[in-house]
Each structure stands twice: as structure tokens, then as C-alpha cells.
Length: 224
Length: 298
Image (cartoon, rainbow over the protein chains, first blue to last red):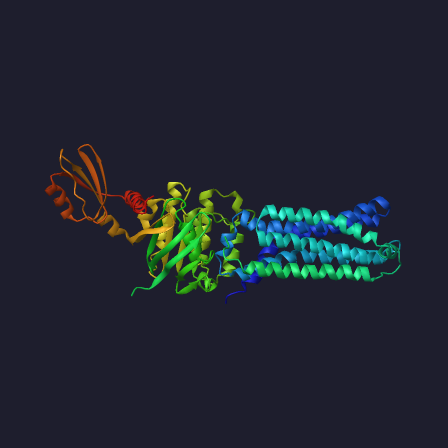
């Protein structure tokens, strides 16, 4: 029986990158443990580390899973298999996004649970954390799209630089909003209009980027 | 009519600085076709088109009865493809690759894979990055051959190999052909390899097929005539003579369709035929390319 090539490729990519995924989850958990220590410095360091583990994974996966296929000339090996361009694109998108999504979700759930479990950290921080975490997912999607569409290391590095340098900017925009700033100290999570708008825009952008990437990829005529 | 493993009809692909133009290529089933061309001739582009990896701008491509690139998935179940610019995953072992290919291809022949491991002197547990170039080529071929494809498409597989490794690989390819249903398209600029194993030969240069026929016909038809030309004698232009190089009283005529009457015609013109020599495939290839370039005014 002929197995599903998309599933086979996804499993193969997962197998090749399992160490990256495990390392990023360990990195995030260590960051949360650091926050658990308490005190201002460990908390700031832990929170930074938490997001860095997501950002680093989001930057590395597209390079390793997409760009290196071309750079290290393994793409002809893959494309010699009974595989169409659409199947390859679907497999690459699903595996790249999936390999990021699993540790991302794990760490976001762990982070939220951590905040909820700590009495000294106000739950009001959760919505902002969700916007920031979703932004790391958006940043990852930008990098993955650049990698898949351009297949160029240069463009992917450029997308990584733009994406990673925008985290500070988005944080600045969030903190400029007085309502969001005030809600940070609230004992309960406040899902205000600005927060919901930011989340909606991020999710919509993620959907558009992934759809455009898939569309552009499937229209390519030359593959190696 | 003989069944064709590969059929390219009027295929064209235009790039900014290179055009593959009006490619006609037929590989009968059960035959080994050698595709010979200098670097940049269009061998790899032709092969990528017939594998569906690059889409032609014009023309029809059929591989094992499947239209390419539209039916490439169906076709590739029965094609084993290896090329000089194809790499395996450096950080993974050969065993990982074998497992992966076995998972994809139900017809994977584990016993044959084990036999090839021994013949090629490879170890499953070795990581690809620890293999020499020759071992990597052998590993790639093992992955291709053990899936028992009906058609092998090999783009410069022997480039950069030492003579022993080349011999091992060519021997294995010849063994594959003991199954009459199998076909091979083998590209190279090494005419020795092609001459050793091919039934059919196609020459390609600057994006055009310049000649294509079976190997024995090439070797039978092409001759080099060494002539002594006395002063005052002018060599006649004869059909089948594609090139004459004269230096004083000595001339060398190259015939692409040799018949004994050519020698008689030169004798009758007053020249003396010193010798009629067979040509190697490399000499035929070079003469063919030069003749083709002269014809198109390059």
C-alpha cells in the first residue's frame, strides 16, 4: 500500500528536528523555573529567556527545515520521490508550522499556568503575554514564508532580522496604551478591546501569510 | 513499435542565458541511453524536465507512459533518480535513509539492499557526513537500486569517482539490466563510462541534441582517413565527410557516414589514402560537437 507522502515527510522532518523541539521546551521550562526563584532580576531574566527560546526556535526551524534542503542539496533527493510540488509544500508548511506550534503551545500553556498558579504575579499580565506570544508565532510565520517562497538564505535572514527586531516595537506599542498598562496589575485577566483587536489582527495576519505562501508555492514551475 | 521508457518531443525551456531548444529524445524500454555533452550543454536541464522538477515551456514529455510534469507522482514510483548535485542528509545515518526509502517504496528489496551494502563496502550505521565522495555516491545508488525501479535516471553519477568506484558502479548498473524490462538514462561528459555500458547514445551541445543513435552504428559509421595530398591536387567535397584538416601534404578527413567509396573517391582525385582509422567515442563526440558548432556558425 502506498503511504501518504505528506505524512511520511512530516514524520521525517519531526524525526530530524526532535532535538531542536526538545531543547526549546527545556529552555522555556528553565526560564519559568528561573521566574519561580522570585526576585526582580530572575523574573526579568526568566521572562526574557522564555520568549527568546520561542524566538530562537522560530528563527532556526525555517532555516533548517526549508533553506537547508536547497543549500545542502537534499531537495533533489526529496523531489526524486513520488511527490508533487503541492504535497511537498503542504508537508513543509505543516511540518515547519507544527514543529513550532507544539513547543509554542506547550510553553504558552505552561506560562499561563505558571502565572495563574502564582499569587504574587497578577493574572492581568496574561492577555499581554498572549499578544506577545502570538506575535512570536506571527514572526515565525513571516520567517517561514520568506524561507518557503524565496528559498534564499539571504531573504530568510533579512526576514529574521526584521521579525526579531519588531518584538521591541510591539512591546512599546502595547505599553503605550494606558488601558493595557493599567490592566497589567489587575488580579484577573482583562480581555479589553485593544487586546482583542491585537490578537485578532495577529491571527488574521498569520492566516493570510500561510495562505499566500501556500498559493505562491503551488504556482512555482521550477523546483530545483 | 518498440515501447518507449522516455519520450521528449519538441521540448523547449528558456532561461536568461541558456535555452534548451527543440529536444527530441527517445529511450526504448530495456535499453541504456548515454547522454553525452560538455559542461553546460543542457544534460541536467533535460533530466530535470523529464523528472518533472523543471517545467518545460513547450513540448511533450512522457516517462513510462506518464505525461510530465502533470503525472510526475505516478511516474516517480517507478523511477530511480540520482544526480551529481544530489545529497543525502549529512547528520543522519545510511540506515535512517534506508528506513525512510523502505517506508516510501513498498517494493523495497531488503535482501538486495544488504547485498549492495556488502558489494559497495558500506556500513548502515555510518553517518553520511563520515562517508567519502565515492561512498556517498554508492549510498545514493543503493537507495535508488534497492527500490527496484523500472527506469534509472542518472545525471553524472560517476563524476569525481576513482576508477575502482566507477568500475563498481558501472558493473552494478550493467547487472541491473539483466532484467529486460529495465531502462537507464545515464548522462555524463565521460565518454568512457558511456561507451562501456550504453546501447544508445545521444550527443547534446549548447541546448540542442546534435545526434542520437545506437552505439554500434556510431562506431561503424565514423572513420578518420589519413591522406597524402600531392601538390596541385585539391580534395573534393564528398558527402559524409564533415571535416578536413590539411597541413601541407598531409590531410585528415573525418567521415560521419563512412563507406569504402569515399576512399576510392579520394584516390581518384589524386590523393593517396594512407590509413582508415576507427574512432573512439570521445573522438566522435568532439568531432560531432565541432561540426555542429560550425554548422550553426559559432
